[in-house]
Amino acid sequence: MPETTPVAKVLSTPAADALIERLRGKHGPVLFHQSGGCCDGSSPMCYPQDDFIVGDEDVQLGEIAGAPFYMSPSQYEYWKHTQLIIDVVEGRGGMFSLENGEGVRFLTRSRLFSDDEIEQLQKDGRL
Image (cartoon, rainbow, N blue to C red; front, side, top):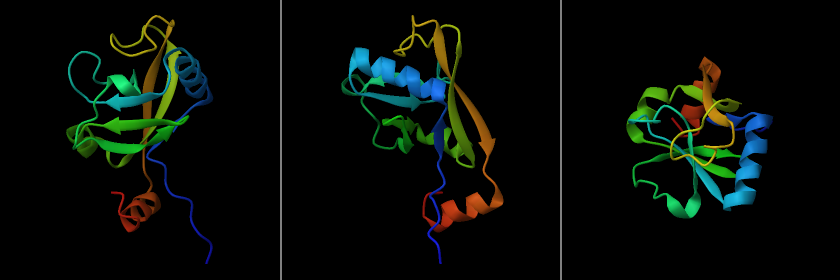
């Protein structure tokens, strides 16, 4: 029986990958966190890995362009049946996010997982 490819909980577009590489060149290793909190909480926030403390309960959804992507547990409960697609659009980045001042910002798009994908995530113990 052929092995199935794991279902990705977070993906990124080529534009997001290019911006991540540019930010990594300026700031070193980066990570993402989407908290759902105040201020810019609905936007994916990009931080230098050494400047952000990931919470003990935060959920790592995966990596995009080699950067770990985390979400707060309360936000994860709301989004766990959804695949996140991180994109870039023109505009001002989050106040504390590294893309601020670049003329673009990260944006989370999403789609619901299919029934087959939900079943696979459950089977893999990832949902």
